[in-house]
Image (tube, rainbow, N blue to C red):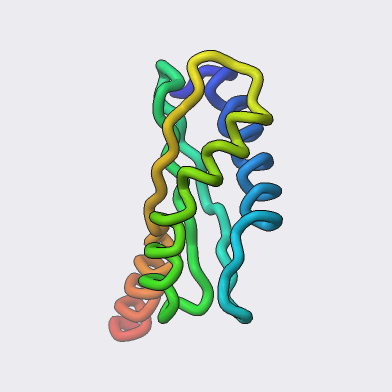
Length: 111
């Protein structure tokens, strides 16, 4: 179970990343990113950002854009975080919605 400190750090990082990505990340018109989950390691050195992309067809485009922009996003995050150590950011595509769709389709086939 996560400690309260990790939970609070995750909430803070999620809020700050949302603001930073909204202002600093320029995507194609009609492409939206949602931060689904933030997972920070217990030693606060690493933070994984799970994102979902709409429309799903633009996932590759968003992945490539984030790979290029992650240093800039990380720099803005570091300027707003007042803690040590500062976590290194990485991102992953959240597949929860896709997996839920598969399960729902399987259940519909059964019934």
